[in-house]
Length: 154
Image 1: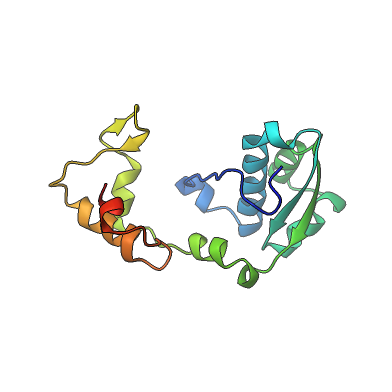
Image 2 (image 1 turned 180 degrees about the horizontal axis):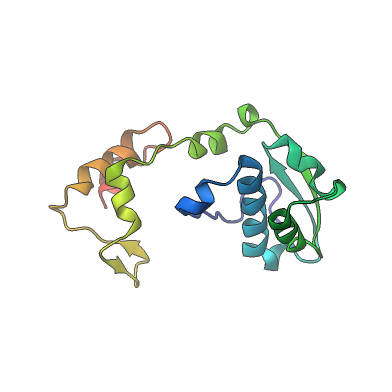
């Protein structure tokens, strides 16, 4: 067991329809998706879900009348967990990641032309107009981090 250290990461792009849902429903959906993704780690263990959506802290104590919320919550039955509120200001990394704007150039990558399954990566031609934008985003953006030019370029 990794105490206060990430075991793995999970990310998923929301569809246009999912982005139209309320913040509460999106946060609930993300909790369910993450719990399902890490099911093999979480079943049979007590775990804590930390969220910056304060109303979700009372999720398991409230009467849910919205049918779509009921469906999401039903998927959490059988897990031993508690939900803790953590203000976004105290969770700076997640807060910064959730605020990254998707530019038109980067949105074009959502339908990649070629994925190298042996590497598990998107492959772009060196002459692609997206290369400079990706280098800028991964190398010099506020949330991109700095791994060095050569590593970013590879």
